[in-house]
Length: 266
Image (cartoon, rainbow, N blue to C red; front, side, top):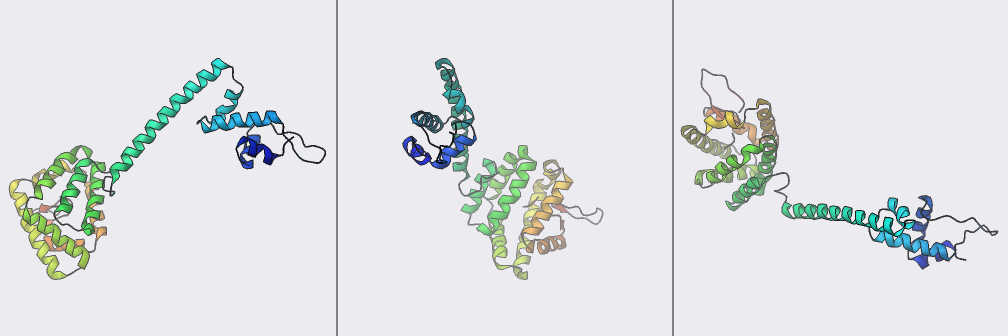
C-alpha cells in the first residue's frame, strides 16, 4: 500500500494535485487505516495516471470524469469535440499573437493603419517623440469617434507633410514641448500657424470642418485634451486669436459680426 507521497511520485504528479483531485471528486479518497494514515493501492495509481494523461492532453478537468468512465464510442465522440474546441482556442491565440506583433512600438494600439502610417511619416520629418505621443492619443480619440472619416483625413495629413512650412511647424512645436513657454518661440509658432491657416482658408479646407466634425461636444472634448497636454496650448490659442483665428480642434476665422466658436488642428 502506498502513501500519498508515493502515489504522487509513481503517477508523476504533485501531492497538491492529488489533494485537488480528491476535492473535485476525480480520485476517491481512501479511509484512514488503524495508524491514521490514508493509503492507496495500484488501482489508484492507474486512475491517477489516466487523469494526468487526459489533463496534459488539454482535456478540461470538468470533463475528465466523463472520459474516465466512458465506453469507447462515447470516449471517441468526446475527444473529437474537445479537439474541435482546442482548434478554436488555438486559432484565437494565433490571432492574438498576430495582433500583438502588429502593435510594434505601440502606435497601432487602438489606431487604424492609416494613422500609424501618418505617424511614421511624421517621425521621418524629424518630429520629436514629445509631440508624437499627444498626436497619437488625439488620433485615438478621433478614430474612435469618426472611424469612417479617418482614411480621407489621413490622406490630407500625409499630403500636408510635403509642405516645408508644415514640417517646420511641427519642429517648432517640438521645441516648445521640450523647452517650455519661451515667448519668442511661441510667437514665431503662432505666426506660422496663422499663415498656414490662411492657406487652408483660401483653399477651402477649413470649410469642410463642420462636415468632418459635426459633434460640438466632441470638439470640446478634443479642445480640453489639447489644453491638458501642455501648458503652451493655452498661450498659443491666445496668440492665434490675436491674429484673427478662434478655436483649436476646429479653427475658424474670427470676425466682428459673429461670435467665436470652439473649434481643425493644422
